[in-house]
Length: 436
Ligand SMILES: [Zn+2]
Ligand SMILES: [Zn+2]
Image 1 (spheres, rainbow, N blue to C red):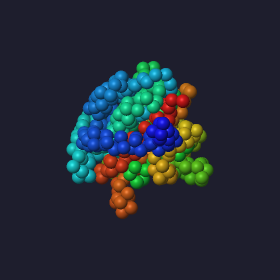
Image 2: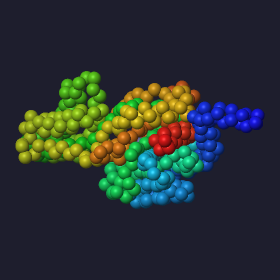
Image 3: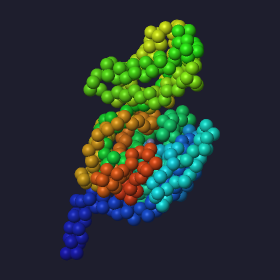
């Protein structure tokens, strides 16, 4: 009798602290699994692949998930894949990891640094490096899969783990959708994604309940003119001068046409023209990136760029049938915006499991973009949350000697960031797929 009431008291105590008990078990389980994940991470880091050529990476990811009992659908949008685990009736959750590296020569001197080279889609051999941390994303996805399989009795529904090609080229998500992604694996009710971020201390979580990233569009402006001798400019039109005026006039769009409290950015990243000092050529080519935080500003910028380019040439006297071509690339990325209600729900779940200390305040410090919205801006849209996990060792951040994304010196602190990424994502997944 006494023993029974003692056992009952123990049971009641445990019952009263289910969240805390679960959390410590989850963190412990992830810590126990970390050596496995670390060796996977180091392998992926040492063998990065370029956008749309993530052949071995997707092979490895598919093998890891297949081995856990997932059904893997390969070849969606080239190297893309989705691993499906059905666990009874319930909602479907998609978790996305991008897989590609960058054409960067690694200079970190890590013992698992990449010396990989790969021929890119244009046929040019390039050095390759995971200089954005997508190796951490793939590793984390595998870590989450391993936990979700083990915790199968705590959730119900369908888990869809997606390996995406070509995030860096901003075309991989679109390619997967165009290749029948949701017809092939089913449409999820929610979607989650993460990015390791160098500017935050390793293992700290940061996200907003609204905007995360800007939109990004690429515009090509071809300024065509009648060529002439460098000493006879009056017999033609000079595309170098007209192009230069366009470069400067484009900046006036940002400062004079957009509200001063609305972020907007136009960068002419490439200007190519001419062959010799004494030749006025017939073509100047401007390649422009355009960033905005809202669809309205995005549309306005793109419209104004066309107007400014065409009318600058017109003002220079270029004939009507030779006015500049303004080509907006069709693969632009919209803003990445979290669903407010879902973001709060996910944050609460993470906070219950990891504590308030696990977070740092999120703020936008540049106009970077993502192609994740191409996976979720469907009709109707799929509610989604995108969060960041700090990746730089705190002492390195404090010293100021850390390298940003896409640098040959980019390096993340794997242990803290992978453990936090797996824990935060697993807590979010358990919340969205939890049994009532
Ligand atoms: Zn990147
Ligand atoms: Zn990235």
